[in-house]
Amino acid sequence: MYLLLLFLVGAVFGLAILGTIFNNKLTKELKNNLPPELQNMGGGRIGFGEELDNLPSDIRTIIIHSFVSSFNLSFIVVIAMGALTLISALFMENIKPKHRFDEKDVIVVSLGE
Image 1 (tube, rainbow, N blue to C red):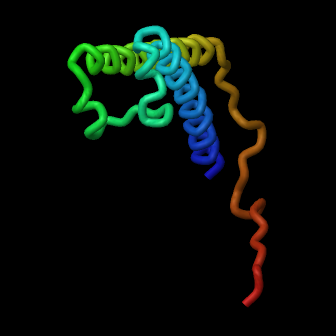
Image 2 (image 1 turned 30 degrees about the vertical axis):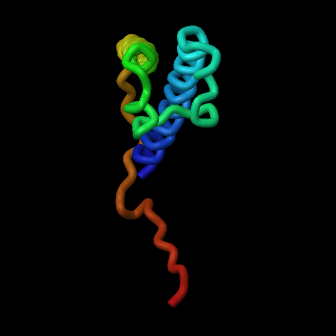
Image 3 (image 1 turned 45 degrees about the vertical axis):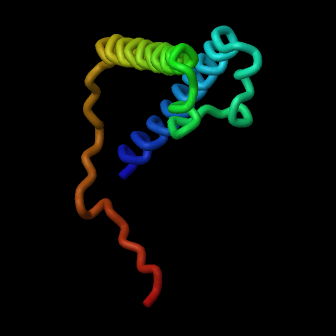
């Protein structure tokens, strides 16, 4: 039960960190590469719908390259975090619990009927 909770908390934090990295990189790439008149296209958002299909091919290429570059950085960060986790796990000791819990150690609580 607690292991699942820790897994989900780790996934939420990882998603938040990688989402922030992706968003910051994408914003920077688009500001540096798009012409000034297109930087606020769509109210600051860029979708994959008709907006992207109706753009000229050179602008579409810039936007797709920016997305790919942002995903690339996100994957590099994931690989680095995984490597750091693997390296730190190699130095952990295998410790057995001193006390083994039996059925007599469990307290059953009734929440009412």
